[in-house]
Image (cartoon, rainbow, N blue to C red; front, side, top):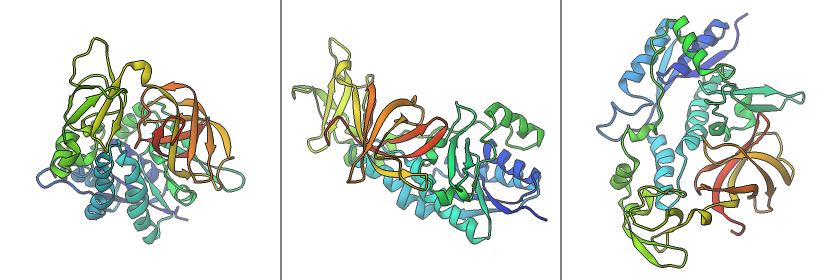
Length: 361
């Protein structure tokens, strides 16, 4: 009896290649699929997710494994959702996380729907995460075994339906073991380096990208302290992030940090380190992975960025579908637009978008 049909999201990288190889070895019927994402004209060779070379590598892996391979053109949908979200975030003065939106709308949107339409029982990816089924049939999203590579943060947008039909074959492995497996399977991607930057920036600087698409986000203005005293000129609010110290461009007797942005008046607000931290924040656009919401008030570990350490906090859900997060100690770089993700032990509960730091909205 054949095992279920699985569509593997392939990128031409080592992680998705090994994920496909493991599933083939386990007896699944496997189809490899690669997304063709939007790139600026002239940068198609540099978009790390779907360059011609990446497609060629993914196709070679499929040939090595003896599985079908297809590409899906989602360029317009990617631009209309992911790139638009990125640009609008900076237009509004926040620091967006487009990878989270890509997972929700593109991978577990367009690709997930395509896989299910083909009759596939599962969509598999090369993410470092795990799932577990509880006694009541509820699926849990767990951290990847490799703490350095864990990607549960960017999967915190998933639902029970997604987890029921998703596989993460490399979630129980260390990255070094994945490399070893790639060599054992004789995959052409075994020594391919990991990608770090946003794919649609094609290795370029995000400020240059913004200047081409929303030049108004880089309009110069005044740098001020909390009292409103003008200290210098900024190059455009999109150039700066909360907590930034270097590259502000002003000379002061003591180090100053970016404290806040006043979008309405185009002001960059700076001050000493002791004014930077906050032990409270507000989170919107919440997604809970479990079958039901958590209690109205509960304790959890919270990550405020993908690579940020997990910090203990009290989370209180409000009647208007927001979450108030009270940390045990102040954090320096709470940044509106980034995703806050909640954990209890190795279980990812879900997350949402940081909209404001401080006690009041």
